[in-house]
Image 1 (cartoon, rainbow, N blue to C red):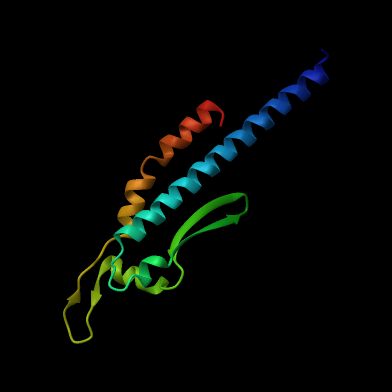
Image 2: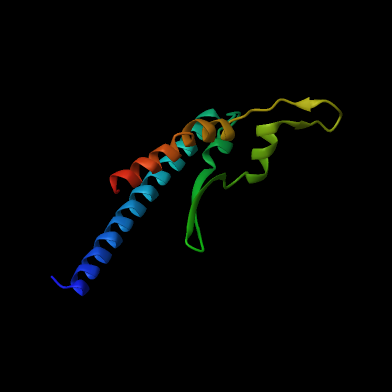
Length: 123
């Protein structure tokens, strides 16, 4: 095997490894985003149930970076008010119902370790 063939083979192997790792990380991030969404739906206030049904996962790609956004499509402006509580019109405060942040904190905590494992194992 001459040097050009060796270089081509190394390049092919590195490209294959990179593709496998990229697919593995993307799959794991999708799984975690779906788990966060499910937890948010489960823990959301359920006066009528319409609010909880509005949670969606959106994939956003920008400049080679990919991220997942868990948000409420129908009632996006209510998420903050329910998470943090808010002032009443006549004085006083409305109780906070944390549901999205706790879901993220519990489900996404192990994601960096999962990504390291995926990189170590090559996908």
